Length: 85
Image (cartoon, rainbow, N blue to C red; front, top):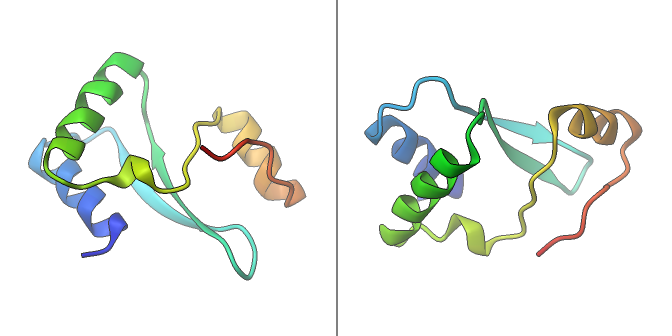
C-alpha cells in the first residue's frame, strides 16, 4: 500500500475531518504529500505516534514541516527551502 493510501486510511480511521491530504507536484522528479489543516502540534504528534505504531513508517521517509506561507513561496519559486531529515 502506498504511503498516501496509508495516511489517508489512518485519517479516515481516526475520523479526522479537518485534516486532508493532497499530492503536490514540485517538479518533474518530485511530488509532495501534503497534510493540510493541522492546528495543534500535540494532536498531530499523538496521531503520528498512533500511525507509526501501526507499522506505517511515514515519518521515516524524507519529510519536512513548513508553514503554509513558506510552502506557497517554495512551490511558486521552485526552490526547496528545508533540510531533509
